[in-house]
Image: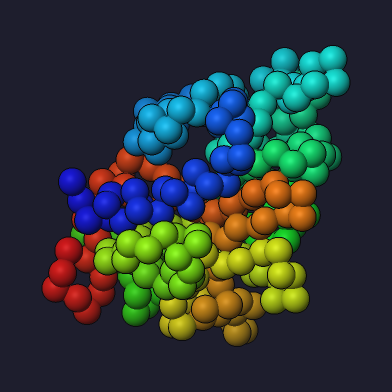
Length: 264
């Protein structure tokens, strides 16, 4: 079992805490994906939720029969959006329907990446975080990158800058860095409802790795949030990640060697 797997398992209580624990019956979760293959490639994460008693209903994000409600009653208690490239949801689902779902006190996990569509970015913005306007921008770090034989552009990040909060992460210390590849986002410091849970290192920046920088990056250092949470005033919980890979079996099982470290 890789060190990163142990680390993310330690973070899973945070991810699962996005779902209301007030009632043990609030367990119905709709999982929307771009490709049903994610059921296999991200099975460790999904299995961890199912082992905690959550009932997952997997559907394609463009399913023409999609609906969160029936006869005015919500069918689900939580929503997982693992469909970053979806341009338009199917059925009666749209951005407003997702936001109304959260406004009703229900919970949301949203995973984006550099291919995040306008509708995914719009939902994130309404939840208090902003992704970079450049759709090709990813987090680059020439210091705190993960050593890899196949990826030399330093976009595979090894991050250990977690929020210091026993309430959110529990009292067990997370030793290993967390593997991340994707885009970052900014959080309005004046918004007390949104917290950065996992931040980039001071040497990180957000840019398109295929283009030479002609001006300073718009977002740099620890101002880049990799994973954020929002606790709404109605007790709804929202977790937003700039990486869908973060939840993948590959990342959960991989041992992580941070640049400059001999520990893996």
